[in-house]
Image (cartoon, one colour):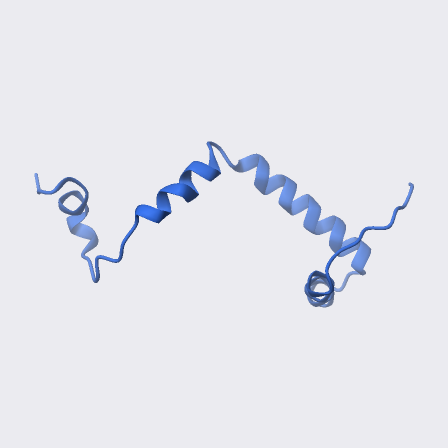
Length: 79
């Protein structure tokens, strides 16, 4: 196995150290684990994430709601 040097921010290194401590692993093992998790999770994502994030700008707080009235909230009336 070969090795290389990776530059990360000081903040990310501190985060990695905290995770490594929780997992009882070295920084190198923890980074490898984090990459594995990120790879698996990114493979699960379907669709265009940027499009979803763009739609959030149209969202607004409608206050307290009742989940049983979801059709009314979405379609303007109940069945």
